[in-house]
Length: 225
Ligand code: SF4
Image 1 (cartoon, rainbow, N blue to C red):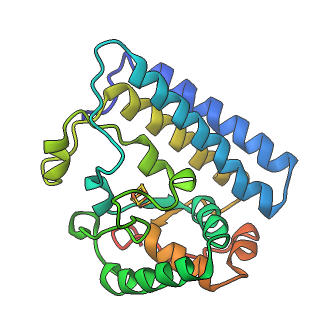
Image 2 (cartoon, rainbow, N blue to C red):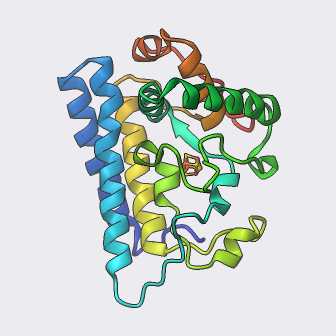
């Protein structure tokens, strides 16, 4: 998908700025780790609202359906607050489900470490046996914003998904604004490979507090580290 045209750019720049300002102000006004983690939910809701709007547009044919999981075999990147939000959800699961996830996270970490984006073709550890996300309500930006019009294209990741342009550009602008908002509020805003970061967040009860103090608690992406 091509980036924004000169005509599209001003509206997208305004969207980035609006999202960045709103998030930065909120994070500075309520400076607690719990708020800093849950603030990402507002941004997720905004992406979901955009997705609903795009689906309702006349002539739009979105192929994404529950049980279709091609995109859950690509590298999922997530910001630290998204990882901690997922960890908080997983901690409420029954013990047996948490243990099973832990085993999948361990196996995933052994295979995913060091893989670049184009090499990462692994099943997400959060994908259930029914090919549905086991943590759907807390899934990160990247899983919310991909809206494809072709299952065949998603099945051939080297070809790339055929994404809705409005969703692609506006969701990227909102995501970038959120990224800047955390950064401007002096919170680490790097993105990380989801499975490996979630494994750390679940194993280390002090990780969230250290992130809030400004530490980089998760490994950088191998192609950016
Ligand atoms: S978090 Fe959920 S939606 Fe995202 S890749 Fe994993 S299983 Fe799929």
